[in-house]
Amino acid sequence: MEPRKARGVSESTVRLADLYRLYNCQRILCSTSQTGSLGAQASDNSLYTDRVFINPTAEATQALHCDLPQWFTTHKRDLPMRTADVSDWGTLVFEIMSQQTPIARVQPIWLEWMERWPTPADLAAASSADIIVAWANLGYPSRALRLKACAATIVEKHDGKVPLTMKELTLLPGVGTYTASALLAFRHGIRVPVLDTNVRRVLVRFLDGREFPPHSTPSKAENNRAEQLLPENGHDAAEVSLSLMEFGALVCTQLSPSCDQCTIRDNCAWAAAGYPKDEKRPTPQPYAGTDRQARGRIMKALRTAHFEGKEGLTKRRVLDVARIDGGDRYQPTRVYRALIKEGMIVYDQDTNRVTLPR
Image 1 (cartoon, helix red, strand yellow):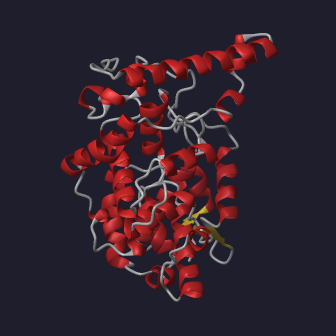
Image 2 (cartoon, helix red, strand yellow):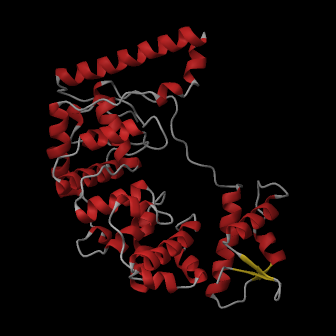
Image 3 (cartoon, helix red, strand yellow):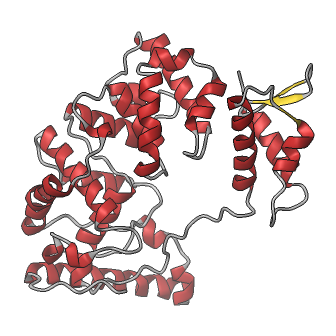
């Protein structure tokens, strides 16, 4: 169902959307004259690479700084990971767990991890097998081993305390700019943009009139624009980022936005433009029949064996587990060798068994 169009949109917002569409039309015409066809332009990523990110009007800034945080105060979810007593380590673990994973799946596992391994030293001392089993169904279990490596680095180089500078954080295994920014902003009120997929989507719709961000990862221009629109006070800036994140998760969702419930719709450039659809829209990654599914089956079988106290599985059994409908004949061997190479599983030549790493 199409989102309903906004009512009472200000003239300044309409002019902004019109200028934006005019700008895009000029770029398309220019590109078409150079390439000879509109179709060639549509497949050219340069249009997205060079895109200008529009700065907010005074009305839009008011909506982001005041209206959205007020909405957040009333509608935010009660998440234990966001409470004031959560440690820096707890926040770091949560942010890594929640990458590409819904919070509903993360929450119970995060609570279990915090009970078992409340400090980096606790996780660093744990066995890799126990960590992978405790990772359960979060997906991409290599993140679990990177967290163990991260904990070990914190213990070895930072006396067991999570560092609090962007440079030091991003040198930790498995920690990127987003994770470091989230920790610094949400835990310590440091004024830094926090750009996850939800925040990026809300901003490009609200300010640029686009359905989705033009890049898979934030560009320098996008990051600079996000930093400029934050309030000067670090704690207020963190509140705006949290509000944007929650709004994108609950209202301005990826494929089914609830625009009739949008508290900032009157100043939304996407609403003013009539909710145009992007030609290149995100599509769910296939799973059935892929190497990801085959890898998941192997890891699940070995987690179960470890949990039940078994000494792993035979290689033949592991390869049989990896055979799935839709996969090619070489898939089980290919996936098995990849997991061995990555250190996710181990073959013990003495026992001829495949196990999780010790």
